[in-house]
Length: 382
Ligand code: GLA
Image (cartoon, rainbow, N blue to C red; front, side):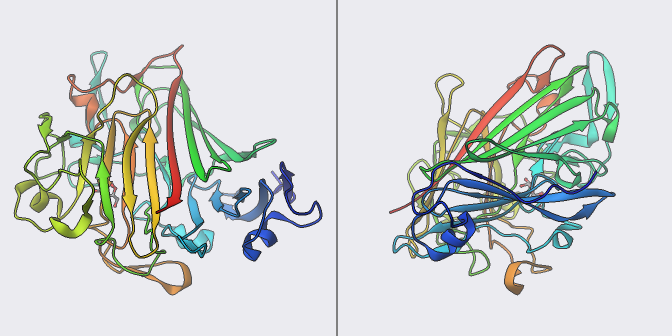
């Protein structure tokens, strides 16, 4: 397959029909809502494309068909100064390999499966282990973060749809699973992520997005001065292998209580058992929700820039991870060294290890059903 030619879909032209979205974004003025596609290298013999989504405010998101990875998110601070607020690399090679899953879509099962095994319809399935005794983020081979997806720019929107067929037996998972992930950038500065999937055999599924944010600008500092609100009265405590014990524990009185906006670093090194086990925050919170609709899960604020990230989702849980395993071995954009806690993830998801916890909301997708989840990252300032 040949790489596609450069494609631009212009939707709203606010300044001039003759000026491209990218040039306008850099000028920091008024912009057109657009998606641009360009060749970005090859992987496994297949072309990889980069898509730049631009909205009317000059906000830009770069995403590529390798791993569905979001490479950059450029948003203004309270003075209108743009910065890139996600960790990442400038080119495809930087992501090969990508041990921290920077920016990627994770699946077939985001987060952990205990002992790399589960039983479905009486049959035991065995998955490759890549996290001590566990399977993390789907396995080792054809996991969604490191395969080449098909990309298709959206017509009439600043968006792109990535599709991928995960074959029956890949990494031990049952069923041919057709997956679609769509990123849409709205003129309200929202990055909307729609997940869809169908299967021909019953299978567990859990999809998430593994972007590491730093609202002060990527690579500038750790994220301990950010202030977080989580709309969650409970979390799923973990054992020493970071597998949920099955308990839904109230956050009240623990360092995991973010029901009121609190500095991320205020309690991160408290001697509370859960903080010690996870070396910081790396837990699944149970989102307070009425019904299955889009619900606010999290609000993160960075006081020096004034940038705010709000995360809404249809999913039942959110993994708040403070980059505890970043250790300075990854060098990202502009030579920035990503040290411990230089980024945070808010991974909307089903609860970890759900296939082994019949009491958790089900993650089993059956033939004839369609899996749908939506997550919205909304960027603003305060
Ligand atoms: C998830 C996990 C973390 C870590 C990262 C990847 O957020 O919960 O423990 O494995 O992925 O480094």
